[in-house]
Length: 234
Image (cartoon, rainbow, N blue to C red):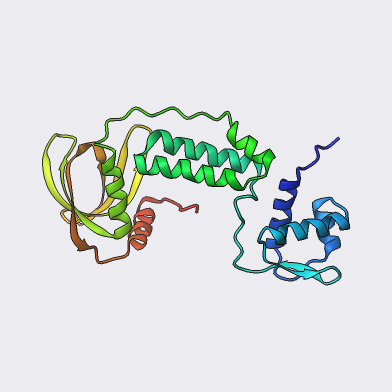
């Protein structure tokens, strides 16, 4: 006998079905797609509307989810919650203090609006993340680097390469990579006139300048992805 779908999962499915249609869909079609009676379907539509879903229509005319509506955190499947918990726990274990706090706050906000059954799954998740051993500079450097990326500010750095040779660089930071044991800053290097990857643990000194780089960060990041054959999946 097939397992019965939870109501929260059914509401999520209903929203996803509505998102795939630009024209009104009849209640009968929606009821059949979600495996419920027409009366239950009407109750589900009313529940979603009460939770903020901008669903237009009425019985006999069909229903449509108006453009621009974003799924609220309450509409998450069990596996989506596991993915969020795993990601947040990794951030909490392996990033700087500001991101750790943000990850904890994000989970708390999600938990506050989840129905009881899904909140229990979030709070009792058995997915564990160990803290990675690495030799980075002080954690606040990572927060400062993220700030520079967001602001589009050039950085002056003193850098020691793999041969222990020190150089002075002016760079345009565009991305920060969190690898298992290393943190890598992706940047356009004015000295080398190209994209370069800088290990955080080899940065001796980092000084923000008052100078913005002349091109948008997202454009530079797209060029770096193209140059390295990296597909952006979000």
